[in-house]
Length: 253
Image (cartoon, rainbow, N blue to C red; front, top):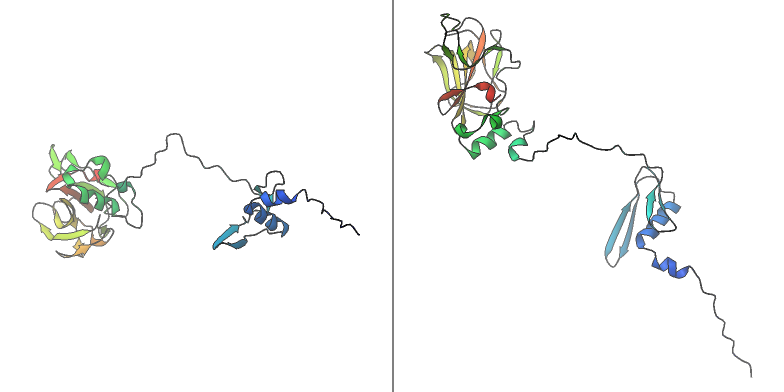
């Protein structure tokens, strides 16, 4: 009677190691073997899950034989991103004002509190320039009167040098509440109300292009500079008023 001979297949010593290797390692092996050098997507459907692996365009991916982890070959060194030791990062909403919304800071300030409670540090930069180029001619506060020569005159605003006919710009969005002749020296004058007690005024104008009740936006041309009223020459007298009282305009510009 012939004896049955059982042939034992030689054991593959590497089979178990291959089974233990991660799915990601197998994917990167495939990417390396395929010579993928640009972005490539490999999608696998496994129990309803789709896994996508993107190979960086800086170089091909290679899997190391020892660990089965993926590494990048010929990847250009990336520059370090650093900041100065004293750098400050401020995520306060009032500081996040962009060119796309130049009124953002002012709106945030005025919606949170009355203009009279806003500090100079908070108000700085919240108003736009009333002229394209600001050249200071006479500051806010006490001074020698350019008309009478007397000392101790209180100057209610900030004077900026400007040739007659220079465009005068709205410092922020608001509503025109006055446009006409000012009987106390301001000549042709415009007042814009920005809400919550904040107003700006523009004086000694040669002409006005707005009417009472009109809505204006920051940077709109509202008038032309001049020398009307109590004025010794062409310039713009610019005022900032908080609850009817004048304050130093430079604290808001």
